[in-house]
Length: 213
Image (cartoon, rainbow, N blue to C red):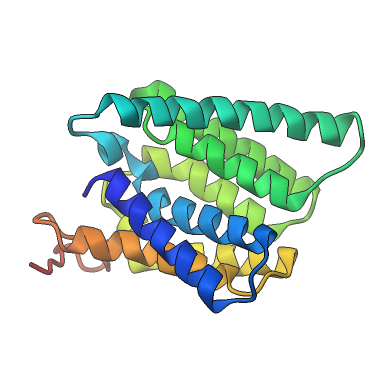
């Protein structure tokens, strides 16, 4: 299934979260960011998220996301190293935008760049003692090198991602983050289950793909 479809489903989950949980601009930004990122993250295991024909508009949007992420990262670095200020919400959104920009890149260079971002998150999570960030960094480091629709498309990855979401919720004290993260990731697996290739939910213990036509 196309990445744009997964992203649209993620945005719908974010909108539902905004309607269900107490609304604020800050929480709304978080819900949409977490839901969108969660709906796309399973496809960090390969370039297939945009493996078909890509329209000029989608290419422009990817480039815009990348440039925006770099700009936001520069602002984050300035605030942290010069002003001595660190905004967790800003950092989370910046990371998500960067990943959305990089997720469409193909080949070894793409994998290396994504893994490098994961290494940065691992380091920052370790130095700041944020377990959820360590988990996110580990996922991003490993996912690009895994077989497509392999381990990232399993119930084990869903549980792991939900745990990351729970840790982020505890860190930010915003209700619903864990549920949104889990729902976003699950939406990707469910959507892919309805494709002809299906999803190996219990891989590697049960290697047959499960399909819903």
